[in-house]
Length: 400
Image 1: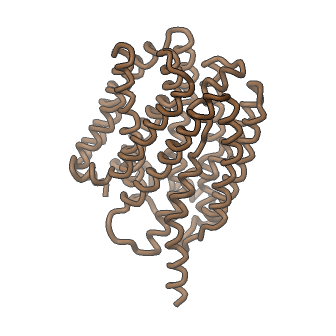
Image 2: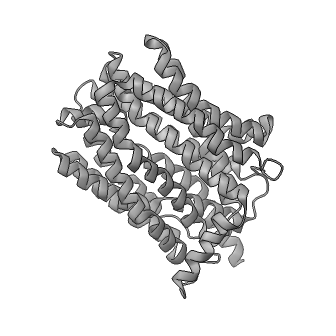
Image 3: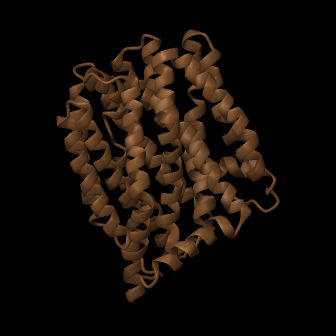
């Protein structure tokens, strides 16, 4: 009887986690964040430097926060992270200098570190307890779809508000950032094994063995998830100056961003069906080729034709966030899932710390065309260095 009651409560976690993902990404300012910061007197180099500061904060806090979540509970971590993120967006709303925005990025980095991977760990823990039959990618796909729908819906609103004032999206984001906190308070922590609190050194050694010493396929899956996550993350910050160079109005930024997010939502929702049609090898090739097509297309296509190639990034994002993330979470012990997901996020941010300011400087000095073309060739090389080693393991590689 107690198990039936618990399972009924846990069943409500699934739609709540989808709602959490939706509102976590319902950030109305994001589609116009670059022009908003430029309007405050920041250069593109400053904007990318802020993202590097954000990445440094994540590197400092992400893995420890995921580890603490695995040890003390994912719900507690989500609540704390949601509260801190909401406070951070109040700083963004009232900020007016580079220092203010740097403080915002550090607060946000700490808050998102506590959130990072916990919703996925809670989702998979819930599915473990409910003994759900069938492929878990469909559940993860709906979660990623909810994220992209949240960002896409916020983008439509951003376009309407930015047409009036760039300050209105910042104000709206400050208000809506509190919603994830209220959702997190209603979640139920699924029972299960937690990370032991006896020896932290032994725990970290066990995590290292599980992620990078147990299976070459898992190691390469993590590296691909990081590398292609970095590619789509860079695109996010390049698209806005790219649109500006094309003479597109700020009001249209929101609608274009919505199109990008809704495309990502569509492909994340049906990622499992695409993988079944193409097979795991074909899916990896598709994910690896899309950034090459996107960046080189933006760099060499004349005028507005470059907009067509932007669609490569949301397709890549939707597939990467479902297929690779599922491949990783189904292969690591349940008690270290939050830590594992944090490691993936940490790796992507680490790449941005190193290369983000360089990309921003390249855009400032040489223009977006040179920057995106350069990234296209980087991902062409990356196909050989990152994707091909994973494909060499294809006889053992299964996304399900």
